[in-house]
Length: 165
Ligand SMILES: [Ca+2]
Image 1 (cartoon, protein in one colour):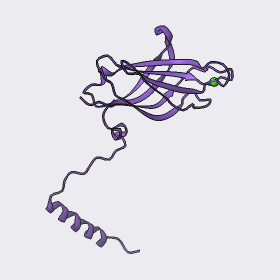
Image 2: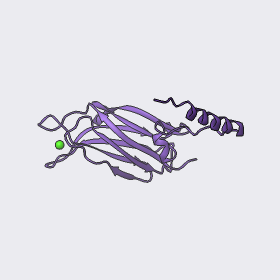
Image 3: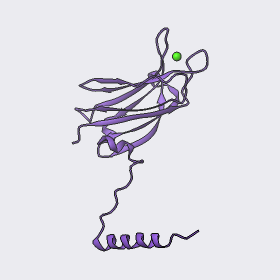
């Protein structure tokens, strides 16, 4: 069983505005609920209802059948308590043997109420590089000696047909 569960908090969209000026200053608390508690926090994105964080966190679930990753979004306030903007629960068991999963998840409010907005995450058990799997180039297939020869010949040909001006 792979031990590291990684989650990239990519972005959120259509968050609720919690400030009098119509905005929010969102950040995400990322924590694992289980026998071993661990908690992280993204940076605060000022005055943005469609924030992009692009931050990655790592957990080591001890009981993948029971552990949950919980994302809670808050509006940061310089005065008073931060306002809760919504949450998502990710049972780790959903990601066993699935590789890296990219998804948009609707936020829920307190006590299971519906909340505005969605959060975009990429997560799963695997190496960090896999979180950017869409951007990685595919490794070239191994070449046989004759293909290599053809390629060299082709390159020579390309050089030979550069037109004169
Ligand atoms: Ca605020």
